[in-house]
Length: 34
Image (cartoon, rainbow, N blue to C red; front, side, top):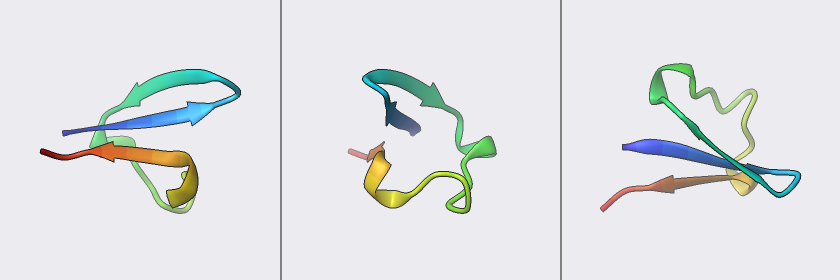
């Protein structure tokens, strides 16, 4: 499972180990879980 951050038109894949709700707002983060 990876966390994809959409910011300024750029897409960045972030490992869950550095994922922190304090820094990444739910509305700007898309979590792909299937």
